Length: 204
Length: 202
Image (cartoon, rainbow over all chains, first blue to last red):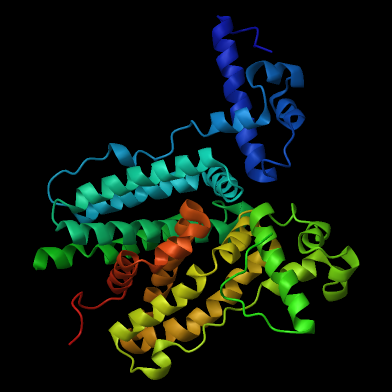
């Protein structure tokens, strides 16, 4: 169960737990939550079912633990610094894109679980959107009136949601391998800049 | 029992059984996903026998595919109004309204698109066709060469509003879209996405 080379039993336990979560995330993302068995997860990790049950009482409990992984792509740590510029805007877009590109399977799983009525997954989605919304609004408020900042925040979030979901869905399981990430990134930056119209705003 | 769906009229005779099967199946596919919805479950929900369902649809897949119809948007603002930026905003809002009234349809599609199911993936293309006709073309007339790019951006933004709505609010999303505040914000967002001055045209 715990690897013999680990210096303390506690670390071995944490390591097994982490490996279970990684294997489960992979399997839930490809096979779906319902179609994945505890046995499959255990064998992917190379442990017995019984050993897995030592860490998690149920498949549902594994899923709940997966949702505890951080989910905002670091956007929440970004604070406004002077007047909002296109370069700062690109930075926010990149953080959001990197996150969706790096967590495709988890995000698909989350959306599917929400559609199947999972309240934990929904709460997590709402929370990660609130972080993104706050960050964008705070940046826009450095140069915009409240109402305009509100509209632009909503428009940019909708665009990021739509364009990343559509790109991921269209590419299917081969995302992001079969997507030209550079083109995708350039296009998204350009579109978000067009929505934010920061240059327009300075001119007025 | 699934509730009556607001956008379906109730035709009489032969057509109505078919229609009832489709309406019920849509709700169940949205609720349980394609793999989780059997023809038996659809039949039982309707109080029918399995063969009675099979009489109308030979397979579950045929039934699912019958639900994937190209949206019928009815009479559109630009059918009767001149092409201006403001009227195009109304056109986009009208198309969005069709989807906003059908969260179940959206959930049914999205569930299978997330797993890469072939029929629902192919429908992504089908559902872009009316958009190309009703929004992309007028945008091209207004903007010239930038029309296609603006259309794709606007489409993605509208998808984002819809997906976010059905994920975050489920079927309550329809009601929310009818509120004045939502309608105002929606128009402001669409206007923002169509290049041109932010102020209303005189």
